[in-house]
Structures are given as C-alpha cells and as structure tokens.
Amino acid sequence: MWGEKSIKAFEDQMAVVELSDEDPLVRDLHATLQRIGGTMKICKIYQVFDRDPQFEELVEKSYDGVHSHIMSLKKVLCGVSTYNLHERHNSLPTNFLKVFKKYLAELGYTSRYLNKSNANLASAAALDEDIIHKGVEFNFASIEGKFYGAYTVAAQDFRIYAKRDYNKPYRDNQAGMLPPKLAQMMINMGEGLVKNIENAQNAGTTRYTRLLYDPFCGSGSILMESLLCGINCIGSDIRFETVDGAQTNCDWVQKEFEGPAKHSTYETFEQDVTAMNPQAIEQKYHPTMIVSESFLGPYFKKKPTAEEMRVVQKNLGDLYKKAIQKFAALNIPIVFAIAAHKHGIEYIWNEAIEIAIAEGHLKYAPLIPNWILKRFTPEEALTKGYALDRRTLIYDRDDQLVAREIFALVPGQK
Picture (spheres, rainbow, N blue to C red):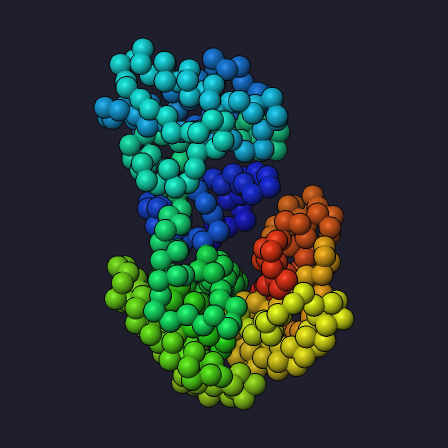
C-alpha cells in the first residue's frame, strides 16, 4: 500500500516510511490503518539519534517533539512502548514516564501514565483511554542501528475486527475461517497488482470498474472486507449453504458498518470452481482480480503423521491445479491462499500448484523488496513468514497444524 520507494528503513516487524502530507493515505491515518489489516499502529517520528541518547536528552527531545500535540490538553495521559532495544533499556518505560511526569508538572501540566511496570502499553488500555486524543504514547525503537523517537497517531481497533469475525450472523465452523485482517491484506495485495499493471500500461484506470472475484467464497470473509474497502465483488462456492451464508454476511456488513460498504455491490452464486467457465465469467462480470482462499483440507481429529499430511496435500493438489488453470484463463492478477501442513519445524508444501502456475504462464509477483530479502537466509525468511524458495507468504499460528500459503500471481507471456 505504501509503495517500495517510500520504505526508508526496515527492522523485524517495523518499517520507516516517508510520505508527503499531501498523500491521500496521510490525510486520514485512522482510516488508512483500518484498511491495511496487518499493521498495529502508525507513529510519527520526531527524533532520530545516531546513538543511544542520554536520558535527559531523550526527555527534552521527546517533549519538544510532542509539544504541539499535547499543548491544548488540561491533563495528559502518557504511555511508552519500546521495540528492538538493548536489554539495558528494559526499565526505560517506567523511568521515562516518571521523569516525564515531573517534567510536565514543572511546565504546568497534570498527567497520568498508563503503563503497568516496564511492559509496553497494552493495546486495550490505549484504546479504552483514547490516549491518541487525550495524551501521547511514546514509541522508542532501534531500527538499522539508529534510535527512533516517535508518537502514535493511529492504532488498530481490534474490537472492530473481532465484531466482524465473531458477530457476523453466519459462521461455518467446519471450514477454516479466514481472519478479517488476512482477508484485508490479501485484498490490498490484489489492488497493488492491478495498479502495477495499470502503471506499466500507462493507463489511468482499468478496463472496467474494480471488481474482485472470490471463487471459494465460503462464508464471505473476503467479500465482506472487499465491500468495506469500497470494492465491488462477486463470490461463488460449491455449497449452496455457504453461498447463502455469504450473502447473509454481506447484507449484515452493509447494514452494520458505515462508509464504503453501503455503496459497494456484491453478488453470490453456487458454482464448483473446477467447472467454472472463465469466458462466461469474463463476459458477464469483467473481474479485475481474483482474491481467494481455497479449501484447506479435512479436519484432523488427532495429530497426523507426515505421511498422512503428504496424502492430504496430494489429494488437494488436483483441486488446486484445476483452480489455477481456470484462474489463468481470466488473465487477471491472482492472490490465492492454499494449505501448507506443518510437521514440527518443517512445512509440507503442495507441489502440484507450482506445475499449474508454470503451465498457466503465470508469473510470481514480488511481495517483499529484494534489499530486504537479501538480509535473510531461506531459514530466517521462513521464520518471518516468507518462503524464499517458493516466493510465497506464510500465515500460521504456533498451535495450528495447517498454515496458509499465499501466492501472488500475474499474467505472463503465452
């Protein structure tokens, strides 16, 4: 969403991004953050130190950096979060807040800090207290050897995501339910691929109005997030029950949430993806991107062996291969999540999909800048969610046996 050229520095789970105040993404950072999905907060940098600053210097520079932000407040709420700092900074949150509180008192402010001990400020406390508008959350981080001071200007509201995930009227507990954040990220990836093609063709717009197609729509997680992003969408699935449930959920989103969802359109229909007629889909709907999560395989009642996982992957391979063949015929960008089974620290991949991608003359889209990837070995990259050899993103949780492997593909030369 930010664009590779805007990324100026990178550290594990953090990035420094340079944007103009005129950038549309900057004008409403809260709305931007709720659209990104995987980003927890956006902070404005007020000071960069080439070395660890002296404590007194850090307090003074921090006040100078946030003065205009807090000057109109009668009482200032304060919090601190630290990232990637040396262990000698373990007590920084508490020490900083105590001194900063005294510093503010000398200047005529009353204040209260929200941290518990030396732990980072809890997201729930920050949201409940509305610290962004009623105070300041300081963020201190070491990024590429420099010490950054910044304050939070937008924070992700996890409660909204929970509402969309757990309060939607239809839930299919027999299928792997795509988290709303991941659905958002996949949609953003699809949007990025479409825009890259537009830019390469020097086109101001696509042939048609943006339309997302999810051929494995399930209960409608991707369709719901598409509507909330203001992108028209269509979805299909092999089971009528899930298609009907997806429609119920999309209706609910349009009634429950203000904003783009109310002005976006959707359509759902029953269809086996292996029987899809790409020409008919193109003629009727003119989709501009496919964003979808496939069937992830059967539910394991007990922990499977590696051989049992390989059997499941082999069985899934036929579905994945046929799906990719159908998708490729539409000649549009594809963001597609499939199953990757975890056996200990190893992954059992699906090999059939790679063959289908080659046969469909699809190209892997770059997902992470090369200057970042060059820092990691394949093993290190995998721990950070990127399968270097497969050029895919991995989304998983420690307590799950099935991860999601995400492919980003664009049409190639035939």
